[in-house]
Length: 521
Image (tube, rainbow, N blue to C red; front, side):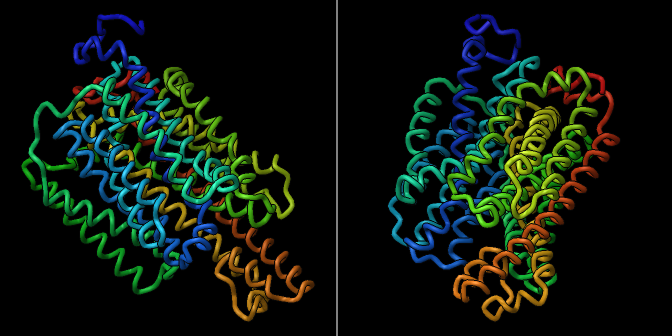
């Protein structure tokens, strides 16, 4: 079927259909670049702090600027892709990412690297929604679920692969190699994308919605900023309250604008469709758990069990491998059991993996760690494909960029919220478990395990070793509580999805979504 000249779908050019799997390979390569960049910098932070003399605040902004710009621009970038061409958006995003990588590699100061990360965030906002919207328009109904499963596997696997790649590079090269590794991949994606990826856009040529675009950028940007800053400023602080309030007001104005605009950027009536709203919430809360777990397990492996960055990355490597192998199997499960059963089952398995983190200790073996990582990988693989497909099946093919942007935005918001909330829960329990011993650590209660271990290094050997052991034990206590919270959130999401997803699941008449998803639940 690969070389047939006859398309089984009237909306797909026969030549495009013949090279659809090669197109998917280019899209997955483009997505891998974005996802690795999304999760790779954390491992390099200690090196950057030393080489660039970066402050803690600068290090935080190196990480957060990317996420902030990326999430804020997703809706606007998806809309521009629909309006002016998704291939153009993809190619422009890749070239801009190349510029950002070049700035990062040659950076000699923390501020320059922060700017480079911002440029990469802008680029990623154009690349990621373009990949999914192009995929949706290239594959016919009966193959779309399989293609989306591969896309979802690469998205999740790439995020998990980032720390491993960075750890390897940092142990063998200088910190700039973390960014330089993207260059040959970007060049390949640009060259093959230009040759293979077809041009497509919204055939209805909807006018742009500049006020809606500006309000969405401001609203989502403020929300992500509030989530990022809340743990440091305190969830009950005036700064946090004002920032969340500003985000709420801006997003309310965005909603009002979209309800009254003749040609809205985001049709809010989509949220009345339970396929769209439940799937969006499910994806967001899945990434809430996954990114929260990445944040905590990375610290656990390095600061509690004593692994190097590369060793910690290798320990987690089976997770992306499992996800890439399991994701293509998800459409078969959906076809057999229906999305209203398979998606909640995936959420439950993910929740069990998250909860299993509550069994690790200060001297646990790798088997205890894999008891959490493997179920989480399997559960995410089962969940992502049907939920992503539901979102894309809820919107017309011409507006695929907006549907893709919604899918990507929920991932980013969920991930940021997971790191902030589960990180705060863990830190709160850490401080509580230390109790009076916290003040004994260099005369001040530490803000986290890394801070505690740095402080005890200045104390006499016996005292320092004792307090270091107490600090590690307190961190594990915090990890346990955060794991249980994450598991409960996913269990509640699974129950809600089971009862709220329509049975059977129908699709948007213009989307011609995958047959697997329309199976009776």
